[in-house]
Image (cartoon, rainbow over all chains, first blue to last red; front, side):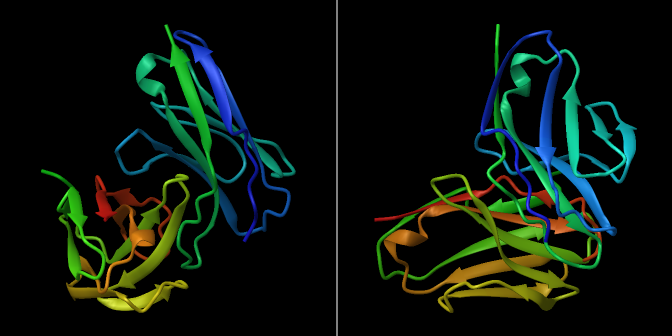
Length: 110
Length: 113
């Protein structure tokens, strides 16, 4: 399983764009990059998943360079409600369970 | 309608007791999971069931026994509770065991005193 490394914490202000980078140097050919969000006292919630280049949905964008050894989750114009822990996971669709790391605690202030 | 629901939300019990946490999903998913999140916020997989069959059993004390009466339910029974079992337990489900989008319940905060 590819190990992921991401910052422990980040601070931002409302209205700013936040980019959280995750490194996964040992990612395998069949692995996907997936991000989850966890609010206090709630279970994690799927945000976005990608294999290469760029993926965008209503919540975030995910940028993956050609070598796929890192990825960046981009949250446009964050608000206070985006304060949460963000987990970067490398997943294989071969039937293994999701393995969560320590995640990045994002704190958004007004 | 809650997609993945766990009961109870809070559970306080004494050491040595036996307790159960129930989980139900109404998403029609084939695969269900139990995760444990400790005080340091590490989220670890405990068990995974696919169509009522155990497919993942991580290194968990055998005091923990999952039971899946049908594919919509995965209950967790814990015998002889210990202080170190205090944590938040999350149930989750996914469409199948090859799907990477999991839906989590709201968690059960277990406190052993």
